[in-house]
Length: 266
Length: 191
Image (cartoon, rainbow over all chains, first blue to last red; front, side, top):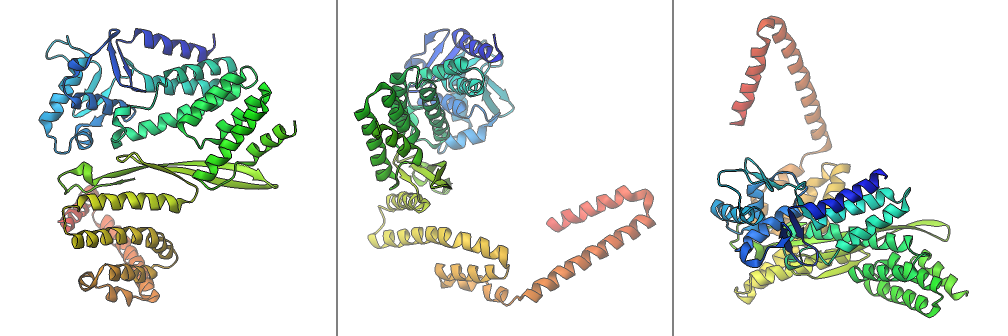
Protein backbone atom coordinates (compact mmCIF):
# COMPACT_ATOMS: atom_id res chain seq x y z
CA UNK A 1 0.00 0.00 0.00
CA UNK A 2 1.38 3.39 -0.96
CA UNK A 3 2.16 6.16 1.46
CA UNK A 4 -0.80 8.23 0.22
CA UNK A 5 -3.22 5.30 0.44
CA UNK A 6 -2.06 4.83 4.03
CA UNK A 7 -2.81 8.46 4.72
CA UNK A 8 -6.30 8.03 3.29
CA UNK A 9 -6.89 5.04 5.51
CA UNK A 10 -5.61 6.86 8.58
CA UNK A 11 -8.00 9.73 7.92
CA UNK A 12 -10.94 7.34 7.63
CA UNK A 13 -9.98 5.53 10.80
CA UNK A 14 -9.59 8.81 12.65
CA UNK A 15 -13.14 9.76 11.73
CA UNK A 16 -14.46 6.43 13.01
CA UNK A 17 -12.49 6.43 16.24
CA UNK A 18 -12.37 10.07 17.27
CA UNK A 19 -14.05 10.73 20.59
CA UNK A 20 -15.21 14.13 19.36
CA UNK A 21 -16.46 14.72 15.81
CA UNK A 22 -17.56 18.10 14.51
CA UNK A 23 -19.54 19.02 11.40
CA UNK A 24 -19.27 22.62 10.26
CA UNK A 25 -20.30 22.28 6.59
CA UNK A 26 -23.97 22.75 5.82
CA UNK A 27 -24.82 22.85 9.51
CA UNK A 28 -23.07 22.71 12.87
CA UNK A 29 -23.16 19.47 14.84
CA UNK A 30 -20.97 17.82 17.43
CA UNK A 31 -20.81 14.15 18.36
CA UNK A 32 -19.29 13.00 21.61
CA UNK A 33 -18.63 9.25 21.75
CA UNK A 34 -20.82 8.93 18.64
CA UNK A 35 -23.74 10.66 20.32
CA UNK A 36 -24.98 13.96 19.01
CA UNK A 37 -24.82 16.79 21.53
CA UNK A 38 -28.20 18.54 21.62
CA UNK A 39 -28.80 22.26 21.91
CA UNK A 40 -29.68 22.05 25.62
CA UNK A 41 -26.19 20.86 26.46
CA UNK A 42 -24.64 23.86 24.71
CA UNK A 43 -26.42 26.41 26.85
CA UNK A 44 -25.41 29.86 25.66
CA UNK A 45 -24.75 30.72 22.04
CA UNK A 46 -21.40 32.25 23.00
CA UNK A 47 -20.20 28.77 23.99
CA UNK A 48 -20.95 27.55 20.46
CA UNK A 49 -19.36 30.67 18.98
CA UNK A 50 -16.17 30.20 20.99
CA UNK A 51 -15.73 26.64 19.75
CA UNK A 52 -16.52 27.74 16.18
CA UNK A 53 -13.97 30.54 16.50
CA UNK A 54 -11.33 28.06 17.69
CA UNK A 55 -12.18 25.82 14.70
CA UNK A 56 -11.96 28.75 12.25
CA UNK A 57 -8.54 29.65 13.63
CA UNK A 58 -7.31 26.13 14.34
CA UNK A 59 -4.08 26.62 12.38
CA UNK A 60 -3.14 29.81 14.17
CA UNK A 61 -1.32 28.23 17.04
CA UNK A 62 -2.18 29.41 20.49
CA UNK A 63 -4.83 32.09 20.16
CA UNK A 64 -4.49 34.79 22.75
CA UNK A 65 -7.50 35.31 24.99
CA UNK A 66 -7.60 39.05 24.22
CA UNK A 67 -7.70 38.37 20.51
CA UNK A 68 -10.56 35.89 20.90
CA UNK A 69 -12.50 38.32 23.08
CA UNK A 70 -12.00 41.17 20.63
CA UNK A 71 -13.70 39.16 17.90
CA UNK A 72 -16.51 37.56 19.87
CA UNK A 73 -17.54 40.17 22.42
CA UNK A 74 -18.35 43.77 21.86
CA UNK A 75 -17.74 44.65 25.47
CA UNK A 76 -16.84 41.35 27.04
CA UNK A 77 -14.80 40.90 30.17
CA UNK A 78 -12.74 38.01 31.55
CA UNK A 79 -15.78 36.50 33.19
CA UNK A 80 -17.67 36.19 29.89
CA UNK A 81 -14.69 34.42 28.37
CA UNK A 82 -14.32 32.06 31.33
CA UNK A 83 -18.01 31.15 31.24
CA UNK A 84 -17.89 30.39 27.51
CA UNK A 85 -14.67 28.40 27.82
CA UNK A 86 -16.10 26.45 30.71
CA UNK A 87 -19.15 25.73 28.52
CA UNK A 88 -16.94 24.42 25.69
CA UNK A 89 -14.96 22.17 28.03
CA UNK A 90 -18.16 20.95 29.65
CA UNK A 91 -19.57 19.92 26.27
CA UNK A 92 -16.33 18.24 25.18
CA UNK A 93 -15.63 16.43 28.46
CA UNK A 94 -18.60 16.56 30.82
CA UNK A 95 -17.07 14.04 33.21
CA UNK A 96 -13.63 15.61 33.53
CA UNK A 97 -12.58 15.62 37.18
CA UNK A 98 -12.17 19.10 38.63
CA UNK A 99 -8.67 20.55 38.82
CA UNK A 100 -7.47 18.51 35.86
CA UNK A 101 -6.34 20.02 32.59
CA UNK A 102 -8.82 19.88 29.68
CA UNK A 103 -7.62 17.48 27.01
CA UNK A 104 -9.31 18.87 23.88
CA UNK A 105 -8.71 22.60 24.35
CA UNK A 106 -5.00 23.07 24.95
CA UNK A 107 -4.15 26.00 27.18
CA UNK A 108 -0.75 27.67 27.29
CA UNK A 109 -0.86 30.58 29.70
CA UNK A 110 -3.59 32.78 28.25
CA UNK A 111 -3.53 31.19 24.80
CA UNK A 112 -5.83 28.46 23.57
CA UNK A 113 -6.05 26.01 20.70
CA UNK A 114 -7.88 22.84 19.77
CA UNK A 115 -6.05 19.54 19.83
CA UNK A 116 -6.48 18.45 16.21
CA UNK A 117 -5.00 15.03 16.96
CA UNK A 118 -7.99 14.27 19.15
CA UNK A 119 -10.87 16.13 17.52
CA UNK A 120 -12.11 15.19 14.05
CA UNK A 121 -13.41 18.24 12.19
CA UNK A 122 -14.96 17.98 8.71
CA UNK A 123 -13.20 21.05 7.29
CA UNK A 124 -9.83 19.80 8.50
CA UNK A 125 -10.47 16.34 7.02
CA UNK A 126 -11.68 17.91 3.75
CA UNK A 127 -8.46 19.90 3.45
CA UNK A 128 -6.36 16.80 4.18
CA UNK A 129 -8.24 14.76 1.54
CA UNK A 130 -7.65 17.46 -1.04
CA UNK A 131 -3.95 17.58 -0.18
CA UNK A 132 -3.77 13.80 -0.74
CA UNK A 133 -5.78 14.16 -3.98
CA UNK A 134 -3.39 16.81 -5.29
CA UNK A 135 -0.29 14.85 -4.26
CA UNK A 136 -1.54 11.64 -5.86
CA UNK A 137 -2.81 13.35 -9.04
CA UNK A 138 0.41 12.93 -11.03
CA UNK A 139 1.28 9.36 -10.10
CA UNK A 140 -1.70 7.50 -8.66
CA UNK A 141 -4.95 8.62 -10.25
CA UNK A 142 -7.02 6.02 -8.44
CA UNK A 143 -5.93 7.29 -4.98
CA UNK A 144 -6.36 10.84 -6.19
CA UNK A 145 -9.91 10.09 -7.29
CA UNK A 146 -10.75 8.45 -4.00
CA UNK A 147 -9.33 11.38 -2.04
CA UNK A 148 -11.29 13.98 -4.03
CA UNK A 149 -14.45 11.91 -3.70
CA UNK A 150 -13.98 11.74 0.08
CA UNK A 151 -13.49 15.50 0.24
CA UNK A 152 -16.60 16.13 -1.84
CA UNK A 153 -18.64 13.75 0.31
CA UNK A 154 -17.80 15.91 3.32
CA UNK A 155 -18.98 19.09 1.65
CA UNK A 156 -22.56 19.29 2.89
CA UNK A 157 -22.86 23.00 2.25
CA UNK A 158 -21.34 26.33 3.16
CA UNK A 159 -19.04 26.61 6.20
CA UNK A 160 -20.96 27.56 9.37
CA UNK A 161 -24.01 28.86 7.49
CA UNK A 162 -25.45 30.53 10.58
CA UNK A 163 -22.30 32.69 10.93
CA UNK A 164 -22.03 34.08 7.41
CA UNK A 165 -22.28 37.64 8.70
CA UNK A 166 -19.44 37.19 11.20
CA UNK A 167 -16.10 38.31 9.83
CA UNK A 168 -14.12 35.83 11.94
CA UNK A 169 -15.64 32.98 9.97
CA UNK A 170 -15.30 34.41 6.45
CA UNK A 171 -11.65 33.49 5.85
CA UNK A 172 -12.27 29.79 6.47
CA UNK A 173 -15.48 29.88 4.39
CA UNK A 174 -13.64 31.40 1.43
CA UNK A 175 -10.74 28.94 1.74
CA UNK A 176 -13.05 25.92 1.80
CA UNK A 177 -15.07 27.25 -1.12
CA UNK A 178 -11.98 27.59 -3.30
CA UNK A 179 -10.75 24.12 -2.26
CA UNK A 180 -14.05 22.46 -3.03
CA UNK A 181 -14.45 24.30 -6.37
CA UNK A 182 -11.05 22.93 -7.35
CA UNK A 183 -11.98 19.42 -6.19
CA UNK A 184 -15.24 19.40 -8.20
CA UNK A 185 -13.50 20.56 -11.37
CA UNK A 186 -10.47 18.23 -11.08
CA UNK A 187 -12.63 15.18 -10.34
CA UNK A 188 -14.98 16.10 -13.20
CA UNK A 189 -11.92 16.24 -15.46
CA UNK A 190 -10.57 12.87 -14.22
CA UNK A 191 -13.97 11.24 -14.79
CA UNK A 192 -14.67 12.89 -18.14
CA UNK A 193 -14.23 9.80 -20.33
CA UNK A 194 -15.01 7.20 -17.69
CA UNK A 195 -18.24 8.71 -16.44
CA UNK A 196 -19.32 11.85 -18.35
CA UNK A 197 -22.67 12.06 -16.55
CA UNK A 198 -20.90 12.29 -13.21
CA UNK A 199 -18.61 14.97 -14.69
CA UNK A 200 -21.68 16.97 -15.70
CA UNK A 201 -23.09 16.66 -12.17
CA UNK A 202 -19.81 17.64 -10.51
CA UNK A 203 -19.39 20.61 -12.82
CA UNK A 204 -22.95 21.65 -11.97
CA UNK A 205 -22.04 21.54 -8.26
CA UNK A 206 -19.14 23.92 -8.95
CA UNK A 207 -21.44 26.26 -10.91
CA UNK A 208 -23.92 26.21 -8.01
CA UNK A 209 -21.15 27.59 -5.77
CA UNK A 210 -19.81 30.09 -8.29
CA UNK A 211 -21.80 30.66 -11.45
CA UNK A 212 -18.82 32.35 -13.15
CA UNK A 213 -16.52 29.29 -12.86
CA UNK A 214 -15.76 28.90 -16.58
CA UNK A 215 -13.79 25.62 -16.28
CA UNK A 216 -16.96 23.94 -15.05
CA UNK A 217 -19.00 25.05 -18.10
CA UNK A 218 -16.23 23.87 -20.43
CA UNK A 219 -16.18 20.46 -18.73
CA UNK A 220 -19.95 20.20 -19.07
CA UNK A 221 -19.67 20.96 -22.79
CA UNK A 222 -16.98 18.30 -23.21
CA UNK A 223 -19.00 15.75 -21.22
CA UNK A 224 -22.15 16.41 -23.25
CA UNK A 225 -20.08 16.09 -26.41
CA UNK A 226 -18.82 12.65 -25.27
CA UNK A 227 -22.42 11.67 -24.53
CA UNK A 228 -23.35 12.84 -28.02
CA UNK A 229 -25.76 15.43 -26.66
CA UNK A 230 -24.92 18.33 -28.97
CA UNK A 231 -27.89 20.61 -28.04
CA UNK A 232 -27.04 20.44 -24.31
CA UNK A 233 -23.38 21.12 -25.04
CA UNK A 234 -24.31 24.27 -26.98
CA UNK A 235 -26.74 25.25 -24.23
CA UNK A 236 -23.94 24.96 -21.65
CA UNK A 237 -21.77 27.29 -23.78
CA UNK A 238 -24.60 29.77 -24.14
CA UNK A 239 -25.20 29.78 -20.39
CA UNK A 240 -21.49 30.37 -19.81
CA UNK A 241 -21.35 33.23 -22.33
CA UNK A 242 -24.46 34.86 -20.83
CA UNK A 243 -23.14 34.67 -17.27
CA UNK A 244 -19.69 36.01 -18.19
CA UNK A 245 -21.25 38.85 -20.14
CA UNK A 246 -23.64 39.69 -17.33
CA UNK A 247 -21.08 39.47 -14.51
CA UNK A 248 -17.87 40.73 -16.15
CA UNK A 249 -18.84 42.02 -19.58
CA UNK A 250 -16.38 39.61 -21.19
CA UNK A 251 -16.41 36.71 -23.68
CA UNK A 252 -15.57 33.10 -22.79
CA UNK A 253 -11.90 32.12 -23.08
CA UNK A 254 -10.45 30.87 -26.39
CA UNK A 255 -10.28 27.34 -24.88
CA UNK A 256 -14.05 27.39 -24.31
CA UNK A 257 -14.73 28.82 -27.77
CA UNK A 258 -12.56 26.07 -29.23
CA UNK A 259 -14.76 23.40 -27.62
CA UNK A 260 -17.80 25.16 -29.12
CA UNK A 261 -16.18 25.04 -32.56
CA UNK A 262 -15.58 21.31 -32.12
CA UNK A 263 -19.24 20.84 -31.19
CA UNK A 264 -20.47 22.94 -34.11
CA UNK A 265 -18.27 21.11 -36.58
CA UNK A 266 -19.99 17.80 -35.84
CA UNK B 1 -9.71 44.53 4.49
CA UNK B 2 -11.25 45.74 7.74
CA UNK B 3 -12.35 49.16 8.92
CA UNK B 4 -12.88 49.68 12.58
CA UNK B 5 -13.81 52.38 14.97
CA UNK B 6 -13.18 51.16 18.48
CA UNK B 7 -14.41 54.33 20.09
CA UNK B 8 -17.99 53.66 19.12
CA UNK B 9 -20.06 51.65 21.53
CA UNK B 10 -21.57 49.25 19.04
CA UNK B 11 -18.44 48.07 17.31
CA UNK B 12 -20.16 45.60 15.03
CA UNK B 13 -22.33 48.36 13.55
CA UNK B 14 -19.21 50.33 12.66
CA UNK B 15 -17.32 47.52 11.01
CA UNK B 16 -17.36 46.50 7.39
CA UNK B 17 -15.33 43.52 6.27
CA UNK B 18 -14.73 42.66 2.63
CA UNK B 19 -13.51 39.46 1.10
CA UNK B 20 -11.97 39.95 -2.33
CA UNK B 21 -11.29 36.98 -4.57
CA UNK B 22 -9.01 37.33 -7.57
CA UNK B 23 -8.94 34.61 -10.15
CA UNK B 24 -6.02 34.89 -12.56
CA UNK B 25 -6.44 33.44 -16.04
CA UNK B 26 -3.50 33.28 -18.40
CA UNK B 27 -4.31 32.28 -21.95
CA UNK B 28 -3.16 32.46 -25.55
CA UNK B 29 -5.16 34.42 -28.10
CA UNK B 30 -4.08 35.03 -31.69
CA UNK B 31 -0.56 33.94 -30.82
CA UNK B 32 -0.31 36.39 -27.96
CA UNK B 33 -0.12 35.56 -24.23
CA UNK B 34 -2.77 37.35 -22.25
CA UNK B 35 -3.73 37.63 -18.62
CA UNK B 36 -7.18 38.29 -17.28
CA UNK B 37 -8.30 38.93 -13.72
CA UNK B 38 -11.78 37.94 -12.66
CA UNK B 39 -12.77 38.92 -9.19
CA UNK B 40 -15.51 38.86 -6.65
CA UNK B 41 -15.88 41.22 -3.74
CA UNK B 42 -18.16 40.22 -0.86
CA UNK B 43 -19.39 42.35 2.00
CA UNK B 44 -19.33 39.99 4.98
CA UNK B 45 -21.81 41.71 7.28
CA UNK B 46 -24.34 42.52 4.55
CA UNK B 47 -23.99 39.32 2.55
CA UNK B 48 -23.94 41.14 -0.81
CA UNK B 49 -21.31 40.41 -3.43
CA UNK B 50 -20.31 41.58 -6.88
CA UNK B 51 -18.19 40.19 -9.68
CA UNK B 52 -15.65 42.47 -11.34
CA UNK B 53 -13.04 42.42 -14.05
CA UNK B 54 -12.14 46.08 -13.49
CA UNK B 55 -10.94 46.75 -9.95
CA UNK B 56 -12.65 50.16 -10.00
CA UNK B 57 -15.96 48.31 -9.82
CA UNK B 58 -14.79 46.57 -6.64
CA UNK B 59 -13.74 49.92 -5.19
CA UNK B 60 -17.15 51.37 -6.07
CA UNK B 61 -18.89 48.42 -4.41
CA UNK B 62 -16.84 48.88 -1.20
CA UNK B 63 -17.42 52.63 -1.25
CA UNK B 64 -21.18 52.13 -1.51
CA UNK B 65 -21.23 49.72 1.42
CA UNK B 66 -19.18 52.18 3.50
CA UNK B 67 -21.55 55.00 2.57
CA UNK B 68 -24.44 52.79 3.74
CA UNK B 69 -22.60 52.36 7.04
CA UNK B 70 -22.22 56.12 7.48
CA UNK B 71 -25.90 56.67 6.62
CA UNK B 72 -26.97 54.00 9.11
CA UNK B 73 -24.75 55.39 11.86
CA UNK B 74 -26.05 58.95 11.33
CA UNK B 75 -29.73 58.22 10.77
CA UNK B 76 -30.69 60.01 13.99
CA UNK B 77 -28.77 63.14 13.04
CA UNK B 78 -30.37 66.05 11.19
CA UNK B 79 -30.42 65.77 7.42
CA UNK B 80 -27.87 68.54 7.15
CA UNK B 81 -25.50 66.87 9.61
CA UNK B 82 -25.96 63.51 7.93
CA UNK B 83 -25.13 64.93 4.50
CA UNK B 84 -22.09 66.69 5.89
CA UNK B 85 -20.77 63.50 7.51
CA UNK B 86 -21.45 61.51 4.38
CA UNK B 87 -19.52 64.02 2.26
CA UNK B 88 -16.60 63.84 4.68
CA UNK B 89 -16.77 60.06 4.73
CA UNK B 90 -16.69 59.85 0.94
CA UNK B 91 -14.08 62.57 0.45
CA UNK B 92 -11.67 60.75 2.71
CA UNK B 93 -12.18 57.57 0.75
CA UNK B 94 -11.68 59.35 -2.56
CA UNK B 95 -8.52 60.97 -1.29
CA UNK B 96 -7.10 57.64 -0.21
CA UNK B 97 -7.83 55.85 -3.47
CA UNK B 98 -6.96 58.71 -5.80
CA UNK B 99 -4.02 60.33 -4.08
CA UNK B 100 -2.54 57.44 -2.08
CA UNK B 101 -0.72 55.66 -4.92
CA UNK B 102 0.31 59.01 -6.48
CA UNK B 103 1.99 60.14 -3.25
CA UNK B 104 3.84 56.84 -2.92
CA UNK B 105 5.09 56.80 -6.50
CA UNK B 106 6.12 60.44 -6.53
CA UNK B 107 7.79 60.16 -3.17
CA UNK B 108 9.90 57.33 -4.49
CA UNK B 109 10.90 59.43 -7.53
CA UNK B 110 11.38 62.70 -5.72
CA UNK B 111 11.03 63.11 -1.92
CA UNK B 112 10.33 66.82 -2.27
CA UNK B 113 7.11 66.20 -4.14
CA UNK B 114 5.51 64.54 -1.15
CA UNK B 115 5.34 67.94 0.50
CA UNK B 116 3.35 69.34 -2.40
CA UNK B 117 1.05 66.33 -2.38
CA UNK B 118 0.52 66.53 1.37
CA UNK B 119 -0.30 70.22 1.06
CA UNK B 120 -2.89 69.49 -1.61
CA UNK B 121 -4.54 66.87 0.55
CA UNK B 122 -4.46 68.98 3.71
CA UNK B 123 -6.02 71.91 1.86
CA UNK B 124 -8.87 69.62 0.82
CA UNK B 125 -9.58 68.86 4.46
CA UNK B 126 -9.93 72.52 5.42
CA UNK B 127 -8.31 75.72 6.53
CA UNK B 128 -8.12 74.74 10.22
CA UNK B 129 -5.71 71.95 9.51
CA UNK B 130 -3.63 74.17 7.23
CA UNK B 131 -3.01 76.52 10.17
CA UNK B 132 -1.93 73.69 12.46
CA UNK B 133 0.50 72.06 10.04
CA UNK B 134 3.44 74.26 8.98
CA UNK B 135 3.55 72.63 5.59
CA UNK B 136 4.76 75.80 3.84
CA UNK B 137 7.97 75.71 5.88
CA UNK B 138 8.62 72.17 4.64
CA UNK B 139 7.93 73.15 1.07
CA UNK B 140 10.85 75.55 1.04
CA UNK B 141 13.28 72.68 1.44
CA UNK B 142 15.16 72.26 -1.81
CA UNK B 143 17.05 69.27 -3.21
CA UNK B 144 20.32 70.87 -2.03
CA UNK B 145 18.84 71.01 1.52
CA UNK B 146 18.23 67.29 1.36
CA UNK B 147 21.80 66.77 0.12
CA UNK B 148 23.20 68.92 2.90
CA UNK B 149 21.30 66.86 5.48
CA UNK B 150 22.54 63.61 3.93
CA UNK B 151 26.17 64.86 3.95
CA UNK B 152 25.86 66.05 7.55
CA UNK B 153 24.58 62.65 8.65
CA UNK B 154 27.46 60.91 6.86
CA UNK B 155 29.98 63.22 8.56
CA UNK B 156 28.35 62.60 11.91
CA UNK B 157 28.55 58.83 11.43
CA UNK B 158 32.26 59.12 10.63
CA UNK B 159 32.89 61.27 13.68
CA UNK B 160 31.07 58.81 15.95
CA UNK B 161 33.15 55.96 14.51
CA UNK B 162 36.38 57.88 15.23
CA UNK B 163 35.20 58.67 18.73
CA UNK B 164 34.32 55.03 19.42
CA UNK B 165 37.79 53.94 18.30
CA UNK B 166 39.37 56.46 20.66
CA UNK B 167 37.20 55.38 23.60
CA UNK B 168 38.01 51.72 22.95
CA UNK B 169 41.74 52.47 22.87
CA UNK B 170 41.67 54.46 26.11
CA UNK B 171 39.56 52.08 28.12
CA UNK B 172 39.80 48.57 26.75
CA UNK B 173 39.12 46.59 29.99
CA UNK B 174 35.82 48.37 30.56
CA UNK B 175 34.50 47.89 27.05
CA UNK B 176 31.32 46.28 28.34
CA UNK B 177 30.67 49.22 30.57
CA UNK B 178 30.98 51.61 27.70
CA UNK B 179 28.31 49.67 25.78
CA UNK B 180 25.96 49.80 28.71
CA UNK B 181 26.48 53.54 28.91
CA UNK B 182 25.39 53.92 25.35
CA UNK B 183 22.27 52.01 26.19
CA UNK B 184 21.56 54.25 29.12
CA UNK B 185 21.91 57.31 26.94
CA UNK B 186 19.44 55.87 24.51
CA UNK B 187 16.95 55.22 27.29
CA UNK B 188 17.38 58.72 28.63
CA UNK B 189 16.79 60.16 25.20
CA UNK B 190 13.63 58.16 24.89
CA UNK B 191 12.36 59.57 28.15
